[in-house]
Length: 192
Image (cartoon, rainbow, N blue to C red; front, top):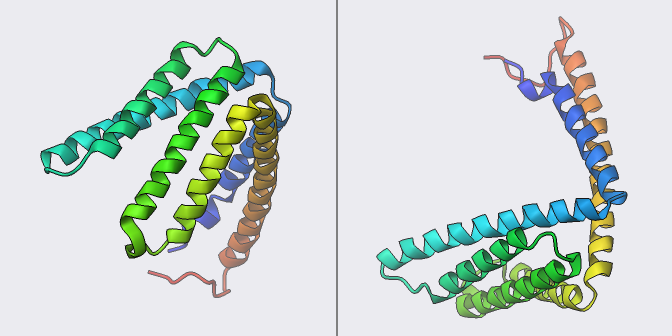
C-alpha cells in the first residue's frame, strides 16, 4: 500500500501557500497585528502557566519539591493575565513584560542546568538556550520596539522561505507519486 503523503502532495502545497501569506502579513505588519500577536502570546503564556500549576500540584501529591515549578507557574499566569487584560495599552509595555519573563525563564534554565549537573546529555544546548533567552530578555527591556519590529520581520521572512520550500517539496512529492503510480514500474513502497 502506498504512503498517503505522496498522494496528498497538494496539502503540503496549500500549507506552503498559507506560510507564505502569513510571512507576507508579518513582513508588512501593522500595530493591530502586533496587538493580535500580543493577545495570543498572552493566551499561550497563561495556558502554559495553568498547566505548570497543575503539574506542580501533581508533584506536591508525590511529595516532591515544587518551589521552582510553582514560582514559574504563578509568574506565567500573572504575565499571561496582564497581557490579556491590558492588551490595548502600548506595545512597549508588554514587550518589557515579556523581556522580564524571558530573563526569569533563562535564569530558571541555568538553575536547572546547575542542579542537574553532568547527568544531562544536552547541557550545552540548555546553557546556550538559557543565556540566549536572558540576552533576548535584556534586549526586549532596553529596546522593546526595535526588537519587536526586527523579530516580526525575521519570522515573516523565514515563514516565506519555509512556504516556498514546502511548495517545492510538494511538487517533488507529486512527481514521485506520479512515477510510482505508473503501472509496470516497481516503486519505492513495499506492497502489503
